[in-house]
Each structure stands twice: as structure tokens, then as C-alpha cells.
Amino acid sequence: MGWILQLISEGEFVNDKKNGLHRKWYENGQLKSEGNYNNGNRNGLNRTWYGNGNIKRIGELKNDVWIGTIKVYTEKGLLRSIVKTDGEFLYEHNILNDKKFVFKYINGEYIEIN
Image (cartoon, rainbow, N blue to C red; front, side, top):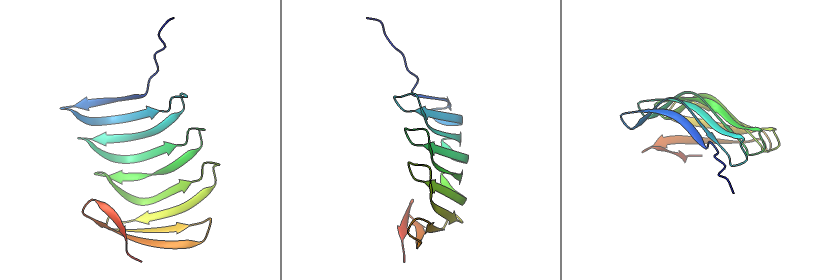
């Protein structure tokens, strides 16, 4: 029996930190995530997909913190929520059930405050 090699991730490291474009794949070969890094931090456009190939989330980060507008989708490809953030506060509008949430960025994570 022969070996089957499958790429599960690719990207460049500089001084043991991620730099440039990095990608990961599911075992089925479908792209799982794609994003840019600078000195180990996610910066710029970041996209993730479900194993079926549908987009899961798309948005931008600066130094590992989400900024601007992030769109989140269901596994079937429907827009689930729109998230807006300024880096300190995160406002989520869940389109499917018309609920709204507010989070504050505290000690490296978003905590719900409403």
C-alpha cells in the first residue's frame, strides 16, 4: 500500500511567527481558513469555510482583533448575522431571529454586556 500525502496547512514563518498568507484545509480537501499574518498576529482579510465549501465567516482583523464589519453565515450559506466592531465593542445583529447583542473586549476576549 502506498502513502497518500494531503496538505493540511501552508504558510511562512519568520522567527517562529506566522507571516504572510496562511491556509488550512479539511481532511476532505476543502479550504477551511485563509488569512494574513504579520509577526504572528492576524491582519487583514480573514475567511473561514464549512467542510461543505460554504463560507462561514468573512471579516478583517488588526493585530488579532476583529475590526469593521464581519459577516457570519449558516452551513447552508444563509447570512446568519452581521457583526460590527471598533475593536473595543462588538455589536451583533442575528438576522435569523432578529436579536441584537453587545459585547465588550476585556482581557483578550469579548464579554456580553447587554
